[in-house]
Length: 406
Image (tube, rainbow, N blue to C red; front, top):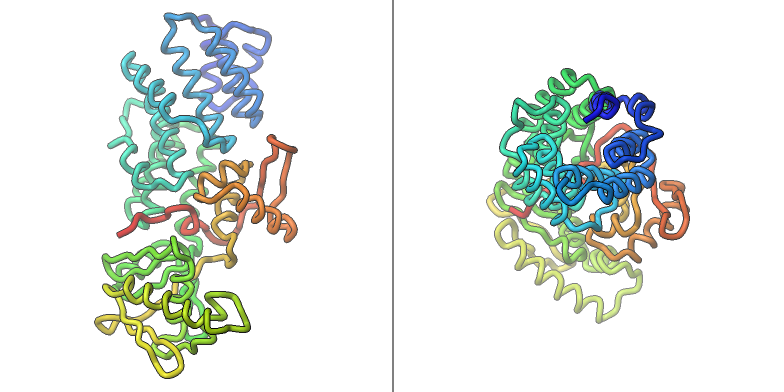
């Protein structure tokens, strides 16, 4: 490695992208192209960075497996920053294996962390937790240790384990301070701020109370019957019932919970669940069917009793009924939560993350754009969507698959 390449690499590690470009901007050899690509990525020029990294990978010879693997890892990180989630994870896994086989543990760890962050964006929390390195190796660069601890903290936060999350964030802070990279310090500070912001609302008795993540964790562990409108689930102690695949069941459960221990009129339930003001015999028959399904689902936690006018929710074991509402209301809350990270998302990436069709996402984005909640940049296939950060609270409970089924 010549002196200019080495100096550019040191500048990139320190977060000095412009300093790196000054040394390699006029060179077209594969190593210089790769460093230019990384520098452009740090400056936010992701399409150009991707092009340079691909040119660098093609330029390395047949016996330069490690260099090509490093380019693959760098390109995967750029794709993640661009929210391009369509690529196959096998390519990145193969690159990580190559780097590990050649004792390049830092870049192998980087590849694994990119895979973890991609899984988190897709809402695959269980897979992300399994893919996390068991511990951050002390001999790794401090910047990489910080990224590893940030990934571990996000898994813990989205699993509602706030104590391990705080521990990981404390280690991330220490590593970021040793790395002295301003962008990394800012990312750690933002992650730590999530713990102190309201994450949900406790609704009931005509009032609402904002809750932090640790308070939500305590509420879910309290044994109360929690109707969780953030993730559309029912909780009581260690039991979780996910009726999310049938939205009408959760709508009925929430309506009954809001009135508990009282009853809800059949007409009110029909209007809320089926969105009609003029119910007929078919709606009443459908209500009986859906209430039967909800009754069968809720057996471990509560009974749904028929009354003269409608139905009432009766929790098992004398539990209290609590409604946990999201910090923002609306059918597009999870979509806004993803866009609030400040990155530019494509509709295909949003559809992958939310498990919805691309056409459904497009319709929702059009509605949000009309309400000035999101904006688009680019055109046609290059079109991306952005949203201003949602200040004052965290939307972590609205992200896809925030908790695995219990």
